[in-house]
Amino acid sequence: MTHAPVPDPATPWAALGGDPALLERVAPPGQAESAGADRADGPTGLLGARLPVLELARSTVAVCALAAAELAALRTGGPVPRVGVDDGAVATAFVSERHLRIDGRPPVSFAPLSRFWRTSDGWVRTHANYPHHRARLLTALGLPGDTGPEAVAEAFARWRAVEAEEAVYAAGGLAVALRSPAEWAAHPQGAAVAARPLLTLDRTGAPRAPRRFTAPDAPPGAPAAGLRVLDLTRVIAGPVATRTLALLGADVLRVDAPQLPESQDAHSDTGFGKRSALLDLRARADRAAFEELLGSADVLVTGYRPGALDAYGLGADALAGRHPGLVVAQLSAWGTGGPWRGRRGFDSLVQVATGIAAVEGGQREPGALPAQALDHGTGYLLAAGVLRAVTEQTREGGARLLRASLAGTAHWLLSGPRRAVAPAAPASYDPAVHLTTSDSPLGELRHARCPVTPPGGGPADWPSPPGRLGADAPRWRTAATA
Image 1 (spheres, rainbow, N blue to C red):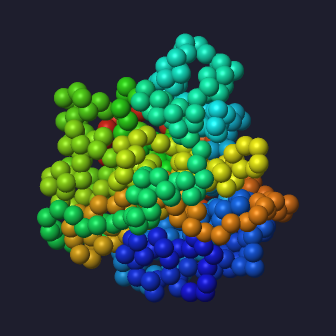
Image 2 (cartoon, one colour; image 1 turned 90 degrees about the horizontal axis):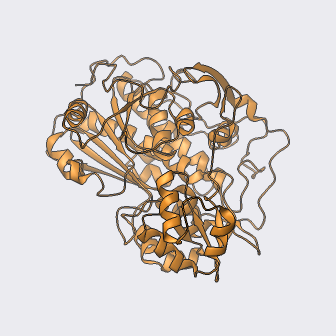
């Protein structure tokens, strides 16, 4: 393979145990791209930033496409097809939530109290999109529930940034102090993230015979056909991963707790190809229904904090013991080690803690990436890891444990080169080329296409649109794999 920009696909592919020779099947930049996209001779501004965001986005999609091609070849007995990545499609998909229209209406995005705030010695960023996070933030600041941004700004101005971070966290809210990359590297959590690989894919549990697909003649472009994926994720990264697996043929069932608020608009962006059910694991009947689903699942994808599901018997060791052929994919914000392993986190907060916001900012205030690239990029890496896990199982048997984190992806991004100035977007780039419309129970949806091209000429769009969150019955719709 010719020299690729950093971050390049070789890092995640190696972390997932992929054959390095297969990287030759990935077309270099410039050979499979649309007008206005990046070429091998340098960036033209798609996802323009000081950090190599397009390179990261391109690489995560390429690794996912390669993992899909590898599994497709294994199932059909043919050679691994060549995969290409269209930078225009990648750039459009990485801001899919901005392109979404629901009967012409844009989705609701960040809430008024989710933003940067100046403190006495720096900055903090908060995340208060969910009502309970907003309430906890205001409680930490000693403010009433109907407080607006002006009073919150006055309150934060009296705090030191790290003190505000700790106080809001202690109250169950979400606030992170702005740090430079060097400050994050010196932080115990930054050191813990840096000490681990970008991704880990481990064999776990008792030995089991290699996987057999009940439908070895998978349709073209559907290497995941016959797989049942139980989706316990929320907010972009996990849903992007399972949305991608659905495009590749998997039967994906998302399960949410009815007591946790969730955004229908977010699901309208990431719910393509899936069904969505509600189950309360604290209720006996719902727990029994969930265990029945889990018993015939091939893949479980979770997006809860490390340890949060252990009380329900859904820790990695317990799952491997009860379900020896399961692929467990665990997604977290801050990783599985270090003092912040149990903290909640979102893309915007990880950008601030790790130093990305400092790099992308100016003299007067912090900045942000041109996309929630940690979310989207980690989502495609997670999907790639699931596909590689299934490939390994088909050859060797056994259960697999896959782990990824937003902070790990941030560390990878920060390891790449930096530009003095973010390049401007090319005038010739037209995102409409990569958008389409679908009729849905929610109305007409305008949405971005998946940037992962299914191998073998598979469908370029999902088999079904998203429906209303939690409206489906908690059952599978396809036959299970053997």
